[in-house]
Length: 471
Ligand code: SAH
Ligand code: SF4
Ligand code: F3S
Image (tube, rainbow, N blue to C red):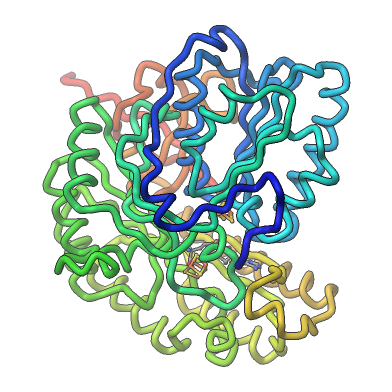
């Protein structure tokens, strides 16, 4: 995918990007000024936003939850489906009004959307009040762009990935759980997916750099790390150093941080060694997000997913057998071009066989520039909606069924903060990634505690902290 032909958009050559020395700018210029950051999309963006927060803090900004109070508004955008775009443009409409009242307000748009062809142009022409546009490969430029920025428009998006920058100064959202990038980009090119275009080709971080980061997090008291990548199971393939995700996972587990998680697992690269490592280490959490996308081998082929229905089921059953108590969630797309009722029934068949702990379900959204967008989107929108409803009903029933199995049991929960389910409630996740709301255990935020589950709902559990007593 080529970058838009924009006068101000600087398109760098690969060599040039490699020689750019990223800097961690520090300044008091914006001391006490406020930033409002809104993040769309996946965990990748959530973690990138921790980098953006680091950059803004280094310039003296402090955060605000109210965008109308802000001196700078930064949107970290997502391009995965059309509605992701709509949300961003919708919010920009409100920002436009604010900018009229507050002309000195700086507006920055970054993330996956500007990496798409045409988006920077649209921003330039239809949203001239946007001051700064940056992409996923040059988040580090944001500091420089803000420092230089007046009320002009500065668009800088790289079409080339460049080298991995290891000195990122994150401002992490939590003191207990941390995201750790193990790779950037994706080489899978599923036919419907924009990510390989917005994030570039797969680049794995060197194992040592990852292990050093995890050791540092442990030293700082973190209780949980989540290894992050679009396709973690393909970790290392591009490095050709002889190590893979199984090796990395084992080395991370040995560091001894109490909880190790990872997302996302592509079924195609999931090896037996990986399953063995997950089963072997108690601190690798028994939870796997294993996107299915479709249960029809015909549709899977059109999607370029590289596995059949049967291969998915075989892998699923193997994981369930070897890792007792494992919980498995998935992603499913309905309404992919040429998906017949029979194909959809195949998806339901897999769901009924696997009885997933949970699922993110989506209606297919054609993304310009992807191969699937060239196939005629020939499913009526009512049919897509109906399939989604049918699927969600079944998914939610299984989710509740799984949750009910927890009632009366004692589980370990890492309490991460206050719950939105009541003033004196806190919440956190079980090892199997079930959300638990717990009455009065404020003093336990930031601890792993034993909790007795008292009630099951479709999307969460209620519980009480176990009080040990000698009497
Ligand atoms: N790397 C992960 C997923 C990244 S995107 C993986 O391979 O599983 C998250 C989810 O969004 C995907 O799993 C898919 O279910 C959904 N998705 C991606 N592109 C989509 C599209 N064009 N329309 C609808 N859903 C899409
Ligand atoms: Fe997209 Fe497929 Fe890569 Fe996941 S594995 S990010 S769905 S191309
Ligand atoms: Fe969206 Fe980019 Fe993630 S397109 S889903 S934020 S990688």
